Length: 271
Image (cartoon, rainbow, N blue to C red):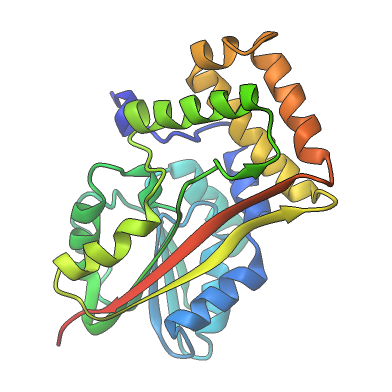
């Protein structure tokens, strides 16, 4: 049986839908090009979720490329196979990335996007483990957020206090990492990767009218958070229901400004 720290923080019945909706194809393509992913490459998508990102990478490596998505959740691999499988050069497998992955061979690129934030303890070990599936000279592609979910203006102090407490609860009880992205350079440096390069771009950059995809993503995250940290959210005046109502009102105000920095880090495995 999984403990809280081993279980997936965002697990809920709408998780495949949330992950699909929040994935911006243009952003994924731009990020993949920065890493140098192109035609003919073999790419491993680690923590592929419902498969949308794997499918986008598959498009970029044609002709002749192969994309393999792996995820620990059987439901998400089932979704990925149903919606994005069945094409030449794309496959989805159930794998625990904390364990050796010996049957998939080696890859030119290993793509790890929005995964290591769920492994505050163990991220370095995971990178080391999956590095065994990277060809000598291949590229490790790490992408994650920094100061996750906490950059809003002008949020009332009472709401901001709840968010800060909830995110630290996620750190302490669910192994979540608010600062996953800033650690990537050191991880690759410590593992002996070469030609390490870092880029910083906005992930969330929300102002003016709110997109329906952003509203669904953020409200779902808060709904799950309220279930995972009930004492914190119930301490808000009016309780968790009132907090969610007030956050939605704040978030839909076109005057609001919300951002999250995305850190991209790539390194070459020594020959």
